[in-house]
Image (cartoon, rainbow, N blue to C red; front, side, top):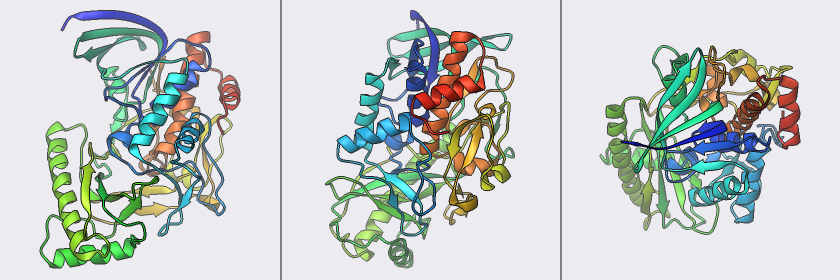
Length: 423
């Protein structure tokens, strides 16, 4: 395809999920010319494209909870509240964690309102296909649209793609999964309608129904003990978090098989619930996905690697730019229970700025679940609430670098606080 346009920015952000939207707004609020690029037809990432039913990491697990993420994340919560889809955190029945339940359409609109009210420019339906790097400095990226190619030059870049695509294109260092090729399993979310509001969706009631379904020969049913979450709003719909697969988002053949398997599982669970879960007799499948929910793939090699010991012990850093408040929650095997390790005092740990800076790439930053950490710390920082915080920090750092040529941690922290972020 021909090159249809060349444009220049101070800061370019790749990926329009929680971390990417936060990065673009954070950068734009410093006053630099900013562009946000997203390959989907809407913003929101896993919350909208994979129907993940909650934001985790906004609040600590203490009782009462302490808010750990604000700034751009709070803007999104405020917009959800104005639409009638947020009334504060909800305590979960089984784990006692504090989450923000979501409706995908409300998240799409809330994200639209946030990004269009900002000073950032933005493009949907735009995928990055290559990068130009000279002596460790990222000069430009090339994107593809149905109309042709775009070349986007910038002084600094943020990879918030979720898969570390820009880092890989730039020759940046990364590991896959735990470094030995093992990744956390993914989950196909599926939305079910026709469920009365008074129906019991306790996890153990669900488990009893699934075991009955297995005994009846309904297949494929993988996970026994899973979660059904009531979606906020007036629909009464619920989301099933049950259809697991050992998904590799970097392997298109594997990903294709997982998508098809996930939909088969969704129909099998629906049949099971209709037959064995009281109140689900008239339930129906609203939709699945639309994309398989991915937890794990590439992680950058950053200037600092956050460890699980530091996360679990609630480590504080002088160069902190965000808080991690979600417990270390790993999904290691298909169909098996999660492994959870709480943070000390059910509080939070700090994320230092070095976790966002791609090693040996002068002007390339990372945000969201691809930041630099080991597999245990990753089990916490991967969630979207924390992604808002690391995204806003990466955007601010990239913007100040584009404006001043250097990154001063005190200046980054000061700017984040001015923007309402919590450090």
